[in-house]
Structures are given as C-alpha cells and as structure tokens.
Image (cartoon, rainbow, N blue to C red; front, side, top):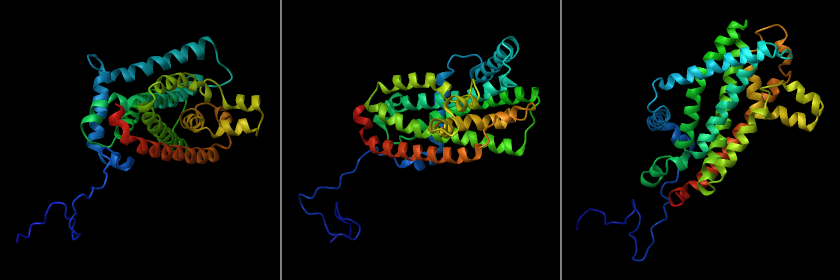
Length: 303
C-alpha cells in the first residue's frame, strides 16, 4: 500500500467520510490592518498609482503640491494679514495656514478613503490582497501632499519670527499622528459602508465642506468658549474633538512662539485634551477596522 495520504486526510486525523462537507472559508476576508501594514511593497505600488493618475499629463507633476500651498500662503498673508488687517490673532497667515494644513489633509484622506474600495473594484474582484490597503494608501497619499504644506508653513513661520523648540516639535509629531490615526479609522469605516451605500460618498463631501468651521482654523478657540460658556458641556465637547486638538497642536508647533502674545491663545489644557483625543481616535480606528473586517467578505459580490 502506498504511503501517500489520500485526499481529504488531515494531518494525523481520520479520513473524510463520504458526504462530509468541508469547512466554509470566506475568500477575500482581510487579515486586519496589521497585514496591510506588512505589505509595504503593495502599499507603495498603490500610492504611486494614485499619484500617477492624479498628475497624469502634468508638466510639474508633484511640483504642484509645492506651488499651490505657496501661492495660498501668499494670498493669506497679503489679503488677510495686510489688506484686511486681521488684528485679533497675530501672524494670522501662519495661524490660518497651519489649521488649514491639518483640516485639508484630514479631508483629503477621508474623502479618498471613502471611495477607495469602490475605485479599486477590479482588484477586489480579481485578486486577493488585504482590502485595508485601499484606505491606507489614500491616507498615505494625503501625507505625501501634506509634506510640501509643512515646508511652506515652516518657511512662513520662520519669516514671522518663529524658532523651533522641543515642546513644539513634540506637538507637531503628536498632531500628525493624531490626524493620521483619526483619518484612517474614519476612512476604514466609511470606505466599507460606501460599498453598500454609494450615496455615502456624496454625504461625506457635504460634511467635509463645513468641517473647516468646526475647528479653530479661521478663529480662535477662545471665541467658542466665550460663546457657549467656560466649562459647559458644549465647550468640553468642542475641546475634546480630536481634529480641534490636532489643529491646536499644529498652532503650538508653528505659530505660538512666532510673536509675543501668540502663546496666550493656546488652550491651557492642551495636554489633557491631547490624551483624550488620542483615546477617541484609537477608539474610532478600532471601530473602523471592526466594521471593515465584518463587511469585507461582501465586497466582491457588491462590486
């Protein structure tokens, strides 16, 4: 008798009996975010693909990501800082541009992540790869576009008298990690739901249009406190908003010590709010991953 095991024999287990049904295997189920993070080569391919598509037939290519923020900062400096003479907030162009860099990066990451699975429908239907790679690549593309904005912001802040400091460096890193964590969590959640409900991406676009007004970008957080009352539940809710905290951390990193008096507008409880914001963002990431993993088995049939 041959020593070769008959088909259906498990390792050391009994032979399968006629009529036995093999265990159900859900094809295409993602291996959680950790598996996507481990596929760095695939991730880099998706990021390069998105960048090539976006800058196809463009002369400057990625150079536009430097030109646009530079022109934008110049407009803010002249129009708001010199012509309209914004006096409530010193170095207003730096303040505004820092907040916009955070909010626009979050908006880009969430908007593209929401569409990412549907936009890669062919890949989802034809081959297996961790589906979390699609929202993750959208967040990485937004990070690529953030880098030139930070360069322009740093140069503008230096021109206004800002000098780097240790606390500001930590605040900058915390702001970037906070935005990335929150954007990825929201992107996983919305990216999976958008496969089932395609109207979601249009709703997200509408919400992102007003998002800039829900954080201290054009105004100081002190105005909100004066309006709703110090210590009120609305004030605490506003201060605990992770995006608000990320904007304030960016302000602390690049604007607070540019001119005397700027630091007075930085919230005194920023460290406490940062801890709360990170807890909330990690919670959103866990929720987003759980929903994404639960729905990922349905992606191929829905697309």
